[in-house]
Image (cartoon, rainbow, N blue to C red; front, side, top):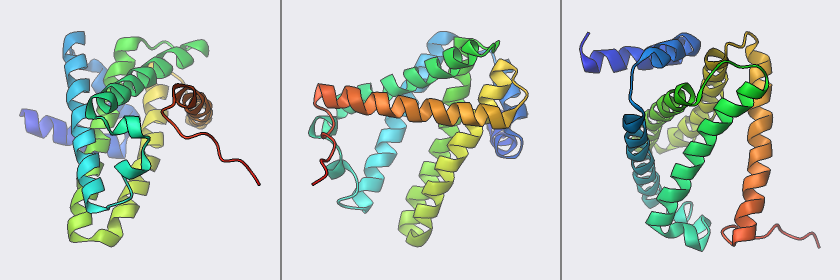
Length: 198
């Protein structure tokens, strides 16, 4: 199977049977140095697609972001840091509940999950040009897919049997991390303070 055919087949397998696809991803031998390079490429590609989408929807993108986050260098570092934190969460939180996964496996799966989401970002961008009404639906689908893939990938990485329990764990971890992230950003002055009730 050629390289292009392999990745196309893996993409289809990921959408159909994500847990089995996760096992295939884990079996791929990739050096750690290559994983960091792949992460850098994905971060830049995601930001480029995001800014292109923002250009097609004025007022819904960078203008809604904190001022400091409009700096491309700061934004790249921020998104890269979020990716590393996600890998650590997938690895460590699963380990706390008796999971058997490791950092390398978590890194592979997070990068592959983000690669799949990049495909949806491209589809959403094209939809903004060709069929604008469908663009929000693709965006919603990508969020749902992110949760579904993380649930299956975490289950496969750590050998968990119950995907519903894993989903609850993923959801609760995401909510808790979201609160912590907002608090830290507010402390650093990178996010607006919470609105006061009058």
